[in-house]
Image (cartoon, rainbow, N blue to C red):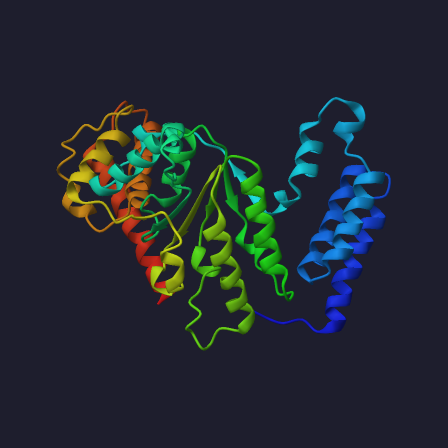
Length: 340
């Protein structure tokens, strides 16, 4: 992570001021730009100045929804959640019946859903509910899909953190962005999905990492430990060996996602061909699919169905499935050579 020079820092501040001036006359943009300056000041230890500026802002620039009495959803989001630039909202469409998991992981998912549905009962007994989960496993094995499933089953919106925006080359800005992100999820009930978590939470034991990254990990540890809801934070990684050791105990539970077994492959095939039948024994290709991810197998099934539809057939033949399997094998071979 590159550390900027004092002259670059002054340029960054100048950019914020330019945005502030350019937004004059548009109260919500003006408030958002001012809030960013306030947040930067607080990050740099200038809390009295930040507090003073916030009081001036609140006294002189009212949100549109307060002035009109008619809340605008866009204006409301801009005012209450100035961190919306750090997340993307994900459309939620799939539920528990759309996912295949190993039995241990499925039990944990069911437990989390029941726990959240019966949270008041647990609170009456002064028992905590799970709010922080870590998903670990290779690509294509259901981590993102499981976050979507949890959001749907809990009737919560799903937001994916924009890691490329959160990580900054400016000194202190990554930690500031993380604080804004956790304040966002603390303000509104939602599922926050932190994919590629290892990009933020690299082990501090690596001598090659810069001190700034160590400070980011320290901040992240504190934010995760303090987060108590009302929503759910889910971190996901394909590279668990690179995570800082102290992070593991900050999560309420850790779920492992692995490539499907033969039993899980059979179940996945039956679900994929539930609405467009396969005209062959689904047990036949299972052995050839062992070692592939759920996403790989789903892609093969979709490709086979496409081939059948384009041939104006009402079912998938074994020949079409075999052609789709060859195409996926070729695709993975090309990917392996490119990454070698």
